[in-house]
Image (tube, rainbow, N blue to C red):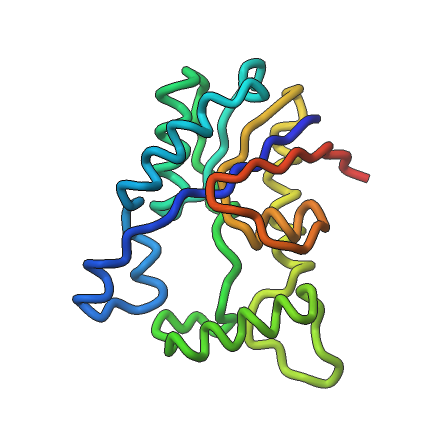
Length: 178
């Protein structure tokens, strides 16, 4: 099955910053106005033409991106919870200091999502992200081509390609569940 991963557009965190929202609460922020234009341009990509369905993360930035694609492409849209962003905390903490969030993310990236030997894991491993992402894709294996709107970290973990995925970027991937 052919997957066209699309990373969400850029969020507008202005209101979140003014209100001092937590990391978790920022997941509800909408796209900024420049992102709306980027998504509209992305929707014109000819690779989407013969896609069967659009799947989306439930986070606002991804869901709003998927909605614009849905409106332009007239493809069915399904929200899948397990396409959500990488979990910065395994203990359910919703309020994590921004510096600690960044520290964990850079550690995750520097290790390509691996777990340091002998270290207690504080955040979701790449293996966990890959497993939940592929479990979602498995449910749609009857389709030939799907669009998946999600997050850079999930895209990296599922495809195994660690590197920056640009906002509104498209990553092609052939899904084979071995």
